[in-house]
Length: 305
Image (tube, rainbow, N blue to C red; front, side, top):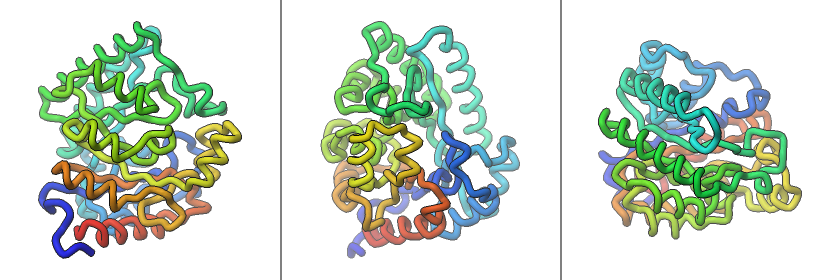
């Protein structure tokens, strides 16, 4: 543990996604752990917040009560955008407004968004070869849509953070650079996802150096390198990658990412906000509470918080 905390403790919130307990993309990756147990274990592991999962109560009044009972708050909802395909702009805006209203009622959290037009990761197909490649018109549509959403969020005092993601048109460092170039930094912030970036061949340290002024939300996801290499070689689907164990938590000795360097780099850039552990794992193979405790213990030793 460092002699002095790596971050200002008043400016950092440690959260965890419920995807280690129950997967939101693939509902059959599940062993029946109920909502109450999920959030109780999140609190027991020492986190102060969590993302929103499909088992959570849809009523924000009920959800806020259940989270507060355990000393938790919401770190983010997720909004899928569909600006790059036909006839989905209005639906995207409607979904965004719905989640903004939900956030207002919850009283906490950032808005995390990702463009899923043409995405391959939710399909039973090869993940990387079938990821979309946006043409000029699609990039313009995406940038215009995101800038509009970001302005709506800013007007309500909410940070909107774009999440690069495997199997989408914003996956690689080159894709991210294109998005960054075309969007307004005052409106569209970044969510760094360490695991997705490494999976796509990117470098977390380079990302932090390039976009430190735009990183307003972080997902701390580890990678099992041997599994990742095998998944890419076999051109497997995202679901098969998850079931094979491509993702794990910070602090897992099976993981390859150097979170000491990543967290230090974020600290050097004066990062403040949510640091959210995320590892989509099969709970039948990776006990969720065990891995949540592992991650929180590692973060305490690494950051002093």
